[in-house]
Amino acid sequence: MMKVAICICTYRRPKGLARLLQGLSRLCFRKVSAPAVELVIVDNTAEGMMRDFCEKAQRDYRWPIRYEIEPCRGISYARNRAIQSVREGTDFVAFIDDDEVPEPSWLDELLYVQGAYHADVVGGPTLGIFEKPVASWLIGAKFFGTDRYPTGKFLKEAYAGNVLIRRDILSRLRVSFDSEYALTGREDLMFFSNIYALGGKLIWADDAVVCEYVPESRTNIKWILRRAYSLGNGRMRVEMRKADSSLKKTIFFAQAVWRALRNSITLLFVAVRGEKLAVIVCLREVFKAFGRMTAIWGVSFKEYQATYGE
Image (cartoon, rainbow, N blue to C red; front, side):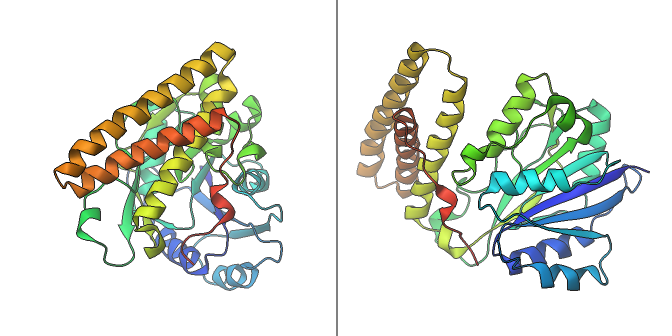
């Protein structure tokens, strides 16, 4: 029987973790034979905040739960502890975040696409779900969740909020989540980019859907722009790690400046027309460009020093 470890890194989100466990308990399998599943929950608090919760959940839960504590604060440390905690003989490692809930067919789809394409890594989409009613301009805006692609699309990167990994490539390629990104994020971008660079096969599964619950604290312009800056900063830091010359860094900086100028000019036109959503979209691109520029100057924006939600 196929063995899968579903890894969950959690930090002070008891309600989110409870919601996720309920969602995972509803997983069903129609395209592949039901695997043997174990949950690996890594609590990223030194005091073990979720220990009692996990012990109670295990009493009548559908699958065994392995509870681990990672006292070093940061998502990179927690993800690495999760991988280290997976039992020998496990075929696949799946990652999902503690503010998400999968569709019942989520793992079925990931495993099916992995088998169909003989993939090393399979990624799927994340859809944003608002916890409370939001302003009308946010409805339909693509500020939350991920882009979507046709199933079978070859990828150069993936994200750890919705992914399946063949266990054997982790030891074969000797990859791990870089601690440099522990509090900044984009550790998964660096991780999966490394797997691709080492010859790993990354494939998209568009029907392997998870929903990310967006707390009220994120549904405002300040957070959206802060997030845009963080994304630009983090992505540029990953790209800089691969830059092998000062000329490339100069080109990166020039491109970032051009992006900022181009979107600033567009911003003026849409502001005159009173197009609020278009204004915010342009501002996001300007803040992403600023994030890229500051990364080239050596700034690392530590987005995950703050926790949003609970």
